[in-house]
Length: 126
Image (cartoon, rainbow, N blue to C red):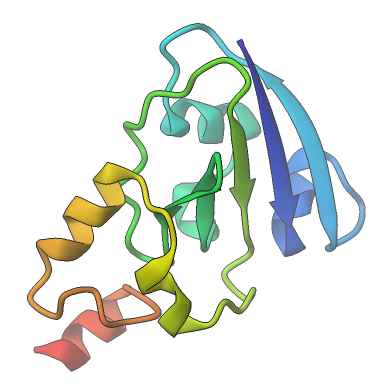
């Protein structure tokens, strides 16, 4: 199956770009591949990515990545943003989300009211 991948910022290098702007990759993966499989195909560690969208649906934020087992389908579009890319925090609550992301956010004590989900942030919340 073919997956249309856009890599923004420093992540463009995982798509073969010499710049830190953007790269577009058509990834060919076996049927039943997951987002984790796509990252392996790109040789991209999951922790280097920030905001992630699959078909326009928010699937991950820095440090909160419940989308690794999300099964991709032929023709899916995946956008992976550098963690330094800014996205207004308050917009996240009205954006379309994958079910896996929504479930992970709703399960948190803070209700997902954060812009980052790294270890330092978790310690601050305690």
